[in-house]
Length: 563
Image (cartoon, rainbow, N blue to C red; front, side, top):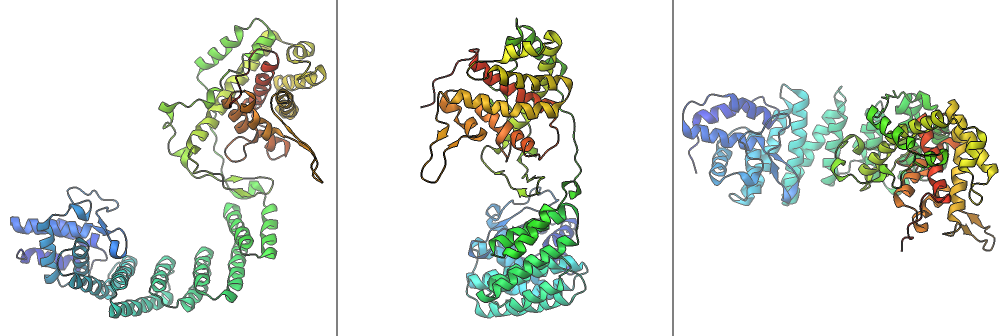
């Protein structure tokens, strides 16, 4: 075992005298001048490594890593496995020599996990060192950091004592934790997170925390989230017959806080209240929460919508215009607005990371008819790709709108010419073709609300007429159940089985009926959930109608149905 260098020991003792964390001690030790003594420098480096390593778990499987937030690691070990035998010998020497209990506990803890020295000595040295450090940390100049450090020391000591069956130390941990919980409850400052950690520590020590949880819920009643957290902790420990009352108190607290709040915070509190009331079987409180949600005006949520126009480069507009210019007739020009393979559905593997980050953020949607918060499957494996596809469809909508405008400029079709280009005896008779022609004419007049409301039912009807010859879209009556016909969502999902490209099926699903991650235009428009869609999205709906009609007119042929 190396000889302890007095100059290093003195600096370490002074650094630890008023410190509230190992990082504070390390900062002072790193800045200290220990002279040119090579042995002192090596011991100083070993101690710095010990102070910068932090517990990464609990109990027998405890590990240590060298992650220190906000500071570079430089040459310090990144984990306990990187520490050499000579450094451990230095830790062992200082564990016996240092008088500061916090440092002593940390060194014994590191040596215990590393398997260095007698196990029982390391266990008791670490746990006792942490416990002895508690009053010193509570007396530190930095009150909050000292409080955090004391709470951590109690947790580490409790983990060690409980894992290695040190009964006397377990009792001491419990007594110290109870005393600190009393101190925190009596303090004028609100330390809700500290109190929650202390109660969790007592709970794992098998101490009855019901009284503390009740007191904490009353003490921090001004913070609804803290109050609910303590009530939930109380519920875990309370008897079965008390849980209904606690659940009622939780939901009532959320509802009362929502009544006193505004904006999205109010909406979030009401959503939590409705969810808990539903899960805990409290129908009256659930109705109260849902009625309040229904009365929430979406404009009052307090959100600021930031929009930036998505405008393709001029070269793409020129290419889109040239593509329809090559068509010899109005009908051919209309068909050319939709490609055989929907470009937004192609998997560009090289581009998948372009928008990494933003599209991976968890998202929620507000149904403005309620509003009711919906959590889409944001962690699905293809969520990032779907986000890119929807963004690409929005981008392509601008090109489709430009093409339709250019077709109007070039051909200036009247009603009869449009009907002649669109009509098909089996799929779109002239009466319905006239209706769809109105949608195009309203689009060119800038009446986008009228255009979209007229076009959407026609898209569904065209698709139904196309599919009726390839797949079953009807279910016959059975007993008291009447027969049904597939609606738009079912029709779109049936397209691949009928031989239509799967990429267009997925594009139409995202465009029209996917409520989680798509545009969901059919439902949002027809149910009055949005105002007039923007021009480029209306163009996408007209493009979808033209794509489907191109099959009826023989411009495209079906692939063999999927097996």
